[in-house]
Image (cartoon, rainbow, N blue to C red; front, side, top):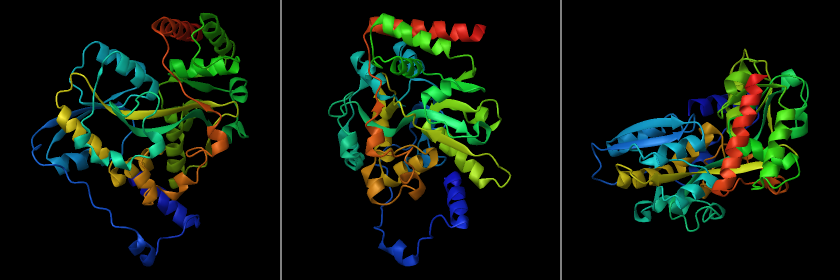
Length: 373
């Protein structure tokens, strides 16, 4: 929330947005605060989420509202999350897997069905974000945030806009890849002319070879947050989730000493769109409180605060309808892409266990080869 306030102050000072008048403010419908059901005081909730993926006050406000304690841990990849649960849930109550990983977890019976009687705020979710391909009827999940994988870059260093995977792979300077085996190999498949969810071992190997032949400029492979590498000048371009670089852009805009221009591009060849979801894993210690927490997250103001802070797309239609999402976010085509761009986005889907082995082996071989260079 502090970062959002800094952004608004900067934009107001530059005259890019107009202040809200008292008349405008009174015209907005009054939103009731979320109220925790009774009976949870003294309990503990264990949340396992991606890094830098929640507003600063989200957890403290829930703890205060319910009189509970929240233990909050982070992971870096879907595969890390899956491996943890396959070994036996150590006690997590809420997790945040991506779309394709949910399908795998449902197949492996790693998720508990939601108790929707405890989640009335599911009514706030956009209709087009419900009953998606990986969880028809939202039996196990509700959407949390959505976004794209694209090119985060230092425009001051590149001296030009970077708009395509081709420009990225041929860039004469340091770049970073994303620690996402399906995402990166999906890009290799796309650029090789194959289905991004191919199960053909020859095509997967061709994607590996495509990436290997274009890995000479790779300075690092990072797990979903290239901000430090970009801000310190260690790389000029990075494959990353869109919200990460938007945060860096906001921090730079609020810092009078920052003279660097950062940008983000959805490559013209296409890229992946993902949806992360709230779910309850089998073996949760407190599944009832987990359902209550999910309802809290789906409150329009809570959901909007998270999206405004982490700068990803909200699936919460009520937050949009109430005008709670920042105007600069809504106006950003790289955050809320227009229809013609969305039509060029693809989704990573689960593959057979045999194909998973092909992907894992290809990614391991690729990283070993790059580290040896």
